[in-house]
Length: 145
Length: 140
Image (cartoon, rainbow over all chains, first blue to last red; front, side, top):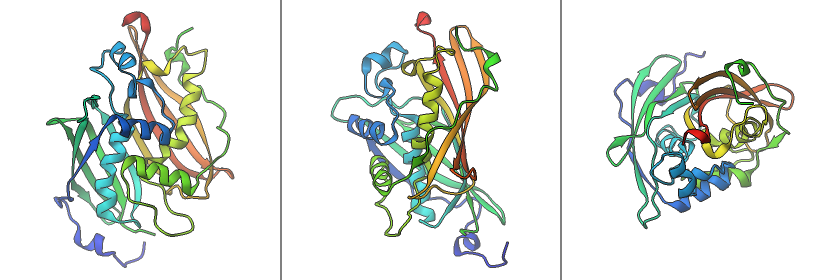
């Protein structure tokens, strides 16, 4: 560790609120994510497959929700930010109906811990007023090197 | 023969080396709404791009006839990435999956796995711990 601190390390403390973001998901979003990620689980494009598992219909990939939520952190922390960890529980599915509307995710983040080495951002992601991720936390290294 | 708690500890061979390319990074960034790649030789991947690399390793779980799992009956319950460093364009990496824990509750099987991603010299890049919930068809 050097004694030099970055602007971020010097100014960010517990309770800092990140700029929120909203993201709109449609069936096209899920198809794009399936292709980009290689996750072709049919519950993310087939209502038949989804309902046979007891889901209300096609649901978003949990990993897509997690990727969208991470944007709140990457936009705030900048391209040089270095992640130590990122985890979440997929507590509630995000149905994405084929109704011309889709689903809207609201992402907010708060710094919940900060010490000399790391900054922890806890993310809250809701869809239709309900939380869809649990224990969603990004830990950033304070030293961007 | 279905999956049982005794499968904890089972490990799979590393995936074929995967090359992280600018084109794939750009495709992934667009799919999740991240901004366009920065103009540098080896841009860093978005945080969850690791899923692209781990996906092939997850496939070895869902195609293992010994376990009797089918992908379309799987829901992802949680995910934890721990990064030694970020993935970057130009990286050549492998992903190695092991089963950590299996819990069986009637027709529901809860499978915890870890995928270790390393470069082709064996240096660690990240690990991805996941829990998958599989529901056997006869229960539906």
